[in-house]
Length: 498
Image (tube, rainbow, N blue to C red; front, side, top):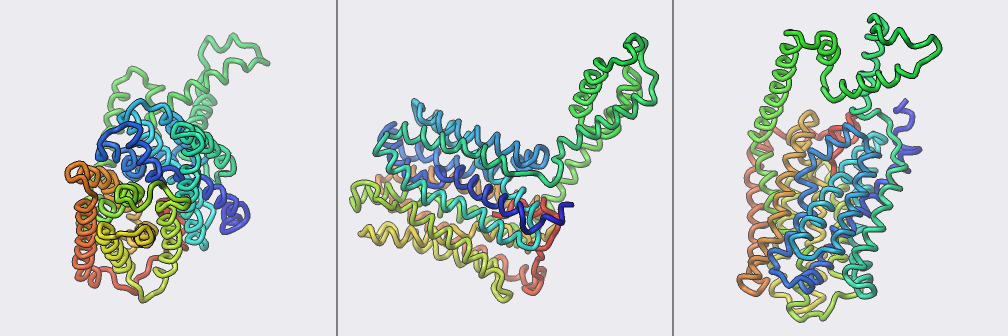
């Protein structure tokens, strides 16, 4: 049934809804650099402490991506998107009443960040379910929603701050984020989520048991035409079965309640759970034994730590150097977002060319971003900062290559776990980058040393990624061994494509 609707039909409605969901969720977090100078002025705190707000909102969702994916797998994209709408909107509105930076770190950094992570997992998973051969195109359109949102929200937040102040801006942006629940309405599931499958299986097992079991003496008092007690009993048993979360233990425990065998069954299930966790840890250790995979994780971490701070600090750099008195009509954050959007599409096209090595292409974007970071401190014009913002934004578009490179290194069978590892390293780098740059400023009262540090760090990451992948890439991953990502039918394995 599902094959008849793949690659078209309602799938394009899903693409539009997912695009709008990422647009609404990531618009403010991706353009947080516009809000950063306002927070500095409002709370009069150090730049290192205030930078935690922007770093957490970008990094928490990535670090928690395995949890977010598990929520989508168990409950489905529609309920998760509705819940994420409440989190994003609630976090933004709470931030309008933040009395200090510490509260802002919780409301904007953690609450909004987790909401964005849930939106990211839900939109990509539902898109994968509706597309097979055109999955790459569909995911490319969906993921540009973050960049378009950053461009639009950077200008919008700037105007809203002028008209209504910082608090009014956050309240209006939060109200707009409630439209995430409207986007969720279009996410019609093709497959029943895991949680509902468990409920259905538990209900079927309970019904079968009731057919063959002799009813209790109390139930014989119900009249022939009455069914009032039966649904209540079934619901209670069903909830109990779903809570225990095992296949065979539920009915056995109910039949043998209080017996010695029920305790043995519990021990058996506990051992099975322990073995599953052991296998999971072993698979992660096998992935991290691959030299190319370790090199890629290090490269993603070093690039995230060095290249993300300009998104947060670039407006403050322009103002602190006296290149502009206030944020322009088209902020530097918007220029970087446009470049990122173009880069995602352009790099996606380039990586499909057979003779282009995807890892070296990623390393080249790191090199370009690192050079731009080194030039920022010596730039004496606002036009120069605009060009450098576009260059760093183009380098940030290499996030669209992460899933492709991960697939090429470990294969489709291990993509889900390996991509979670890569996202963890990336999120960890994003979380540390802005506070480190902020602390450098608090220490030296200048951004120069911070951007020199970031540029050198990114260039070093590009060099390590290139050197560490030369021998192992040629031996284990020849260039003609291209993964068939766009034609696999397993949606779960490509649900985290960025």
